[in-house]
Amino acid sequence: MIYLDYQATTPLAPEARDAMLRWLDGPDGTGFGNPHSPHRMGRMAAAAVDVARTQVAALFPAGGRVIFTSGATEAINLAIRGTASRGGSVSVSAIEHAAVLDTARSLGNWHELGVAQDGLCDPQQDVPDDTRLLAVMQVNNEIGTIQPTLDWHRKAKEMNAIYLCDAVQAYGKVEVTGADMIAVSAHKLHGPKGIGALWVRDGVELQEAQTGGGQEHGLRSGTLSPALCAGFGAAAKLAKDQMAQDSEHVETLWHRARELFSDWTLNGSEDARWHGNLNIRRDGLDVNRLMSDCRNVMFSAGSACASGSGRTSHVLKAIGLDDRQAKCSIRLGFGRYTTLDDIEQAAQAINGAAEEQGL
Image (cartoon, rainbow, N blue to C red):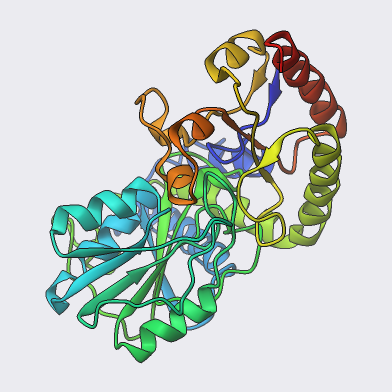
């Protein structure tokens, strides 16, 4: 099988797997300790968590703290709900992940920021004066467009608002800068599922969102998994060490994919985007039939979080596509472990299946 769905999840790096095994049991049977226990095994587990926290923090700006969570969705909820005491409204871009949009909607007082046809959210647009929190993601999970996060952070400062950045698709791939809070997920950079983090800039105060034993700076109670933390840390360290190499590889794959899919229309900006995301459409395409005909190629018809819902992608609609155009779109995601042969074989299968539809 050919895996081209890197925006949904990424293959676990061998280095991350190896780091996790020690804390699932360990050769001497002492790796399963609770990192919040005061005895020797607990202190050993806590030390592993501390190392992982440092490794994860190395990909964030200086001057903040890392709070481990079960994933980016929990991190986003902690960020948005944890700042609710400030009052005011929440302003979010129209192409945010459902974790941001649905959480903002649930609080009642929210505003949607417009997005242009190229998939970019202009920081010069009007924002309600009572905005307490701005949320604009760095790299979009469906179309890959990269937002001007530094400008959005500057605008938030001018409004005395907090800027939250969903950097799930950016973390470990491009430099993450310019925010007051940043949400990330381990399994999007070759780490394990079930763990993420919220980076919080020094001086930003949050309310406790999950009560209990008071772990994670008193903000997110619950026993941490040293194995998941260690896997996350190892994946983050690997991403940092070979970011330039990974980026160069992705550029090679991107240019070849653009050649092979030259007859398709690109959704979103070609330049202001992460080139590991190729979201394209072909008028009249039956995507369900295409996926059935290409069952050995793993790709997406949209966001994995909304697959099976039957709803038209809110991201594609936000950039001006009608229902018909949106439903003729597919997303190909690739990265570190994708080969040129993978891209070429996938293109042959997808283009051939599209031609069978008379396109």
